[in-house]
Length: 224
Ligand SMILES: [Mg+2]
Image 1 (cartoon, rainbow, N blue to C red):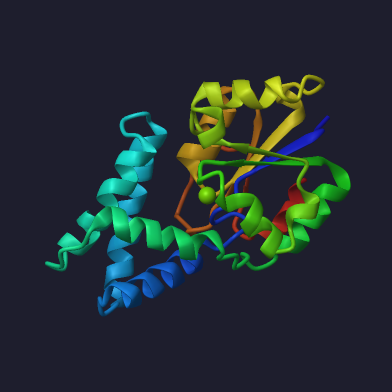
Image 2 (image 1 turned 180 degrees about the vertical axis):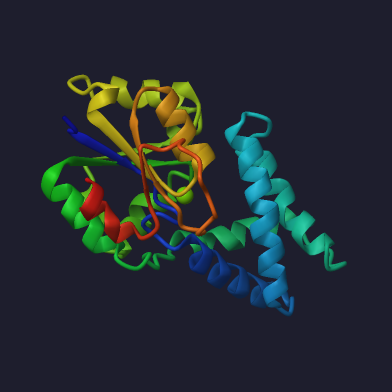
């Protein structure tokens, strides 16, 4: 019987693509860089690759933040102070809270049936604030944030720390919902947690790595 839901935030509840494009555009304005949509496409690609390496324990978050803007703007022959750009980008991102369509309603539904905990690899300072702005904080019992835990999803140690704080709950009484097959689904399944993959990017997929697959977050109401 399911008691607890672990749910990812970015591109599951909040629209990270829209939030980060807005934050990038505003940071470019501050830095005197003319923003072009193809720059955001480059960011998405480079950022995704770096997060994948972080999830696999190959780089730290500090290393990711140090290089991502240098790599993005390097593709457009623009020199930028990557660390300064990152700091300003975070100022904007910390207060961005554009929900995924149907996410608030889906979360309200989940919280009416289960205990709901956030499981996120994003910086500690961002998520509770952004969830509050999106009017979603009221549905969350606990925040499991990798920065505080010391290990990111999908690593085993991340889930060890979650269950240490949920002493009356076992993995098979838990469902992990998220948009990333690597960060959210594979690690949770290896831990014995049931999984619901939200295929946010509409990737053609015929595999069976998740127990449930949905292509709209509102469909949690059908499967859970
Ligand atoms: Mg995500």
